[in-house]
Image 1: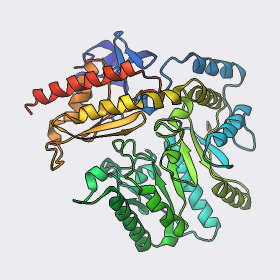
Image 2: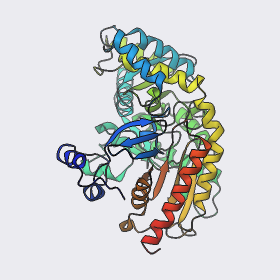
Image 3: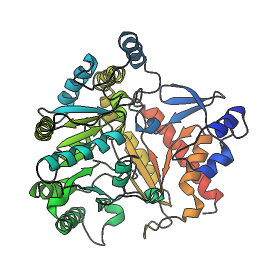
Image 4: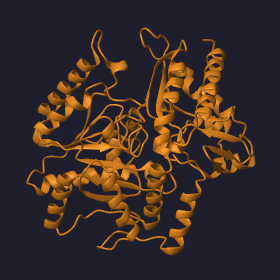
Length: 456
């Protein structure tokens, strides 16, 4: 149990901070965890207690919390040129260099890069790009955006409308014109006796039926995460992207890969698009692009989409959109260093090396009598809890089992994330096999205690 409730720092927090995406009942009872610093994959609170962060902050602190090279890159750039914009044809040299590096790393032969401050802003920006492109091409009716149920694409008004989560009803979202196709979660949604390939083909047929019903000439684009991250780490069913890609091409619908979580190594490949052969028209990146050391989002436009947007923007005299800190030179310098660290300091290699140990640990959790499915790829995974393995019936939500597990694990010095009926893990790329074993040992112990506490 968290012991911060009633402390001076907890009182100061509760009197001044408004927390988002936080279980407020737990916060009010246990108080916040106020952190002071990090070392490696651990963060430390104001009392000096260490926590292994098994979620890399929010998927992004992949090089740990005190990487000397990243810190030095920040200091050097801050001394030289700490801030500027990318408007009016002016841009920092580090931003140009980063653009070249991103295109080199991308699966595209050429293209253009556009910068934002976050993944939400980047996805939101692509929506506007598509709307402008179709309008300038004489198809102003092409405004509908397709995503998938249980997808997560951000928190702006547009990207929250793209996010297939029930909580967005709190804001009266989604807006009209945002469509949600089927979630490619085979374990949860397959019909009895249906193979994984058959499931994927059925979802592809359902997607085409949606497109035809809505009108192909009204669809602006489709956004897909290679692995649905905040949906509970849901890899695509076998053959899914191979099945939907020809349909999108048939109707001239751009495919946008949301790689905010999967980009730069999380799946064991530099891109989830490569891992699952998406062949997208554009890639949205954020999070790992700076290893979590500075806010940044980027849109990597493939050659065809990049050329088309350039052409219509020239006709309009400009692309009338941007953010004050988009392409910030400090962010760009940190990103250049972060990509170097991932590539040359063995971080991507380590993901590949320790992933089998990580996935084996997930499989071990799946042996628990209330674990329905353990799923994952690379260094991202989840165990979904059920009341019955055979029927896959969920646990009584009033028991708040995942929240209880996360809270009890926190008391044992482990940060993990409850998501619906699942516990989600996405540790830093620098994690060792010994630390993986420690992480799963704590989770095994915690799950046993929680289910015992509630009498299951």
